[in-house]
Length: 172
Image 1 (cartoon, rainbow, N blue to C red):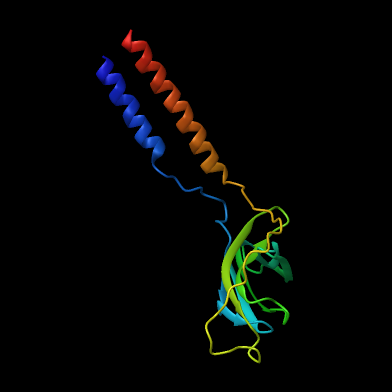
Image 2: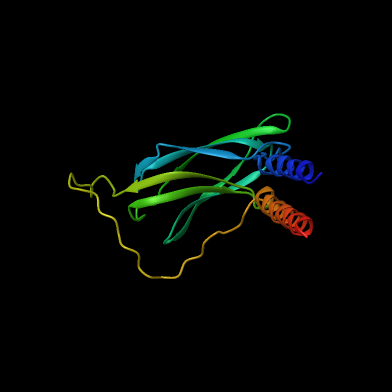
């Protein structure tokens, strides 16, 4: 009896731990940036897919130094699925480094892509690239977690508690 109960609990635990993706009505928004290496003052093309038609996105360029607004776009398309393609100019005074291009809706949905900004071509050199050290300034980290990830942890904690209770009770 105890062996059967333990086997059942282990099978249940294995099923709970199998990752399951969240199925959204229109999918999770996705963006791509071309080129992904651009000189300050240059242009990038941001392409969005898996989005609802007529949805509005704010496009920003983000780094540890802060956020730079590039503009807004509205998703086009027929039916429920749509996308966009928009060209933005990287400000000429943008410091060289690694950035995240973020497309965000008013409801908080977001999609990100990586971008590397180099010095403007008139300032570029053939020498090795340099990286600016951290300034020690305070910055905010986005530590939000997807709902399915939080629920998975809660279920895992509950399952561990139940298994522990059963094992302790059967040991007596």
